[in-house]
Image: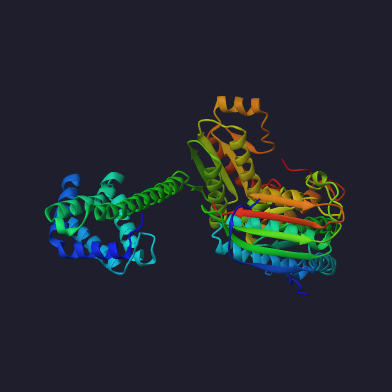
Length: 137
Length: 286
Length: 139
């Protein structure tokens, strides 16, 4: 079975999915990522799906799980590079990818994570460590 | 009514031995019909080619137009009608180019009783009828494909996606949105977001005369797809009566930003991007 | 039902493992490209095939998928048949409802796949297996 490589760049884990994943590969990626987040202490995960020519409900569910798992482990997940045809198909399929943050490309995804870390830190500093981060408008 | 091999041979002989007279009369009839819209030389070339291929086909023993020996003849007829259709000749004018052969045959046979019997003329003219109908059909097919091409070009023209600002693209929608057009707009907009790396899109519906549930549905799907890709859409140009229809139809725009004018929408986006640089940006959740 | 005339020989792919689902996707993609489907339509039909092939594997206990290029005289298209001899579906209407699942998925497989294609036909009965035929025409 193929495994999707996970790269560490600074405080971010970057996963670029380049293969047509079998369901097993998808499940393995989910497990590997959880381990790497804990092992590295990274606070951001970027999943680049530019190369994926389809996202079906199984992969969609995997992306949602990864986002939820990393949130529990205090890391933010951003899915980047979804192709237009894939997005249109997902809407028609009825899959909304709830709770997943998205960006157009890797660069925008990194900005998104950096901006949020910065503001989270700022909030903690201003409001004290126990304060809940306030919801944005 | 198919020709016998004997008859097709005789027709070939007739056409070959009286080539001058046939092509002359043939050209005359067609020229009378077209009234100088095709040059004499061009017309003569067409008639001569058709004559040559027809003789060729008949000498090979073809008994009707669907025969395998008639492949080249069919190709020439298709080419002829395609050319006429593109140059704007009518269907009648195009078919006459073939039917004129009957006049030519008749005049030759009248001049010289030994050239053939009445029965010969009837079977010959049946073949010409076949050729005429085939030409007519090719003509219609060409026109249909022309119309389809034009419809497609119109679709391309009517859905521009423009870059409004760094990171902001806009689609000014003009005219009625049907399902096919909505789909094209949707794909074009989403592709532009990727190509330009723009995280904001403004869909301006000032030029859309009416919004029904289907149109609203298409716009909503586009917005959701854009969010999945990591971009936000703002809808602008909602006129008062459209706002009333939207509410009356019970269409939910949910948390999608709507603005009265394109200018308002752009101001809204710029404020968002301005905030992005200093304060926390709004969370984009798909 | 498809009234199209078959073009070329249908290609068959057995579905017995995860990797076979990937192979089904690749086969459907190749035929969809040959049938001149637009990129969005290719994506839709490959996604639908992925959902249904997974159903064949997970619920039908494996089976086969047959992919063929078709032509209805006006436009080309692609027809795919998913067949298994599994337990079948007892309540078809319920199975076609968004969000209904017996396998712990999102319940979008059948209902979602139906929305992605032009023609969708399903024949099933308890103990009789399931046979789903989908068609997507080029626009």
